[in-house]
Image 1 (cartoon, rainbow, N blue to C red):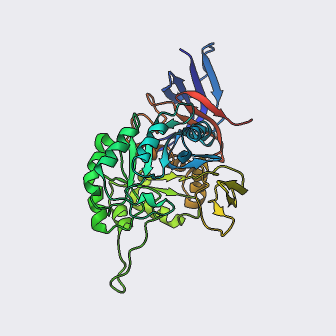
Image 2 (cartoon, rainbow, N blue to C red; image 1 turned 135 degrees about the horizontal axis):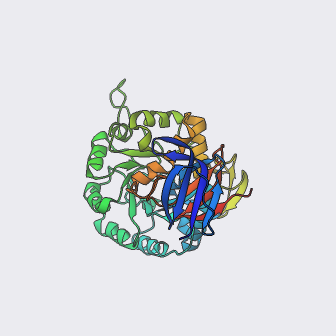
Image 3 (cartoon, rainbow, N blue to C red; image 1 turned 90 degrees about the horizontal axis):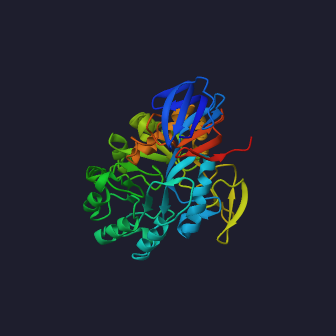
Length: 391
């Protein structure tokens, strides 16, 4: 059987960094991790000298709407384009994130997405940001709907072989009963777009919602009802519960880095993830671009998109490799910790910690080779070299 050996790598391990290691890939899996030794000459063995670069588990984006000229909500063609493009940013698996559509049309559209056939980053499920939300944020009004068991089951069925990962607001009437359906079989449910009370949030957590997405964004501060007494709400309930993980859009604008530092202090390093929540245009060079008859501007690589007309935010321009670099710069974490925040930790959120998110024997060979500045040089999906940067 043909195999690939990556040698002389700095391997990102679950609790640290392994120096000068060799990783053998065979049959789409990691067959061996150990000290680098001179490989035996073999026509069926392809050897890559990592030259001391970082070898990380493949990145997993839990929340992404678009990339470059592609947008999930446009349909299968754009989703295929995203799958083919994402490995350039180290992403080997992702949750295409779907904005809500009217009842009936949503399940039909999701069914077409689930049948998309192409190569590249793997679809690990579909993230449904709505319709069971209390606040729209940047989403359309169709995001606001009461709990509806029939609709939830239709969306789960439409996702086909993929998990349907729902984002919900704990204060939506009847949501606790739906969470048992949404989380059946270990599928996660995310909390977001909420002004829920502590009690409502605790109830949703107890019912199975164990992750909060784009934390702090569209989590408004509760009103002060007793002068001088700081109110608590969903944010505090989530931070206080060690069963709940969180993710952030770490572009330096969507959330203050001090909030991410606080989450790391409360949650520990294994329960904080980074996402992009990227929209169309993410990954493009800084400057002005036109999408759907709207002129938007990116001030710098990874900057949020802003409307040229009034400067308003209109989506994230982040890519996941840039998020990891930002973590090193803005949070003062080590490179290997930053890389776990975009690989190991999100794999655990999805219940995939036994197959993905680690460079270990028996795991899927979803891997990223990065240079000292955490820029992606090579990406492997299922052991296949799917992206290689120009030398």
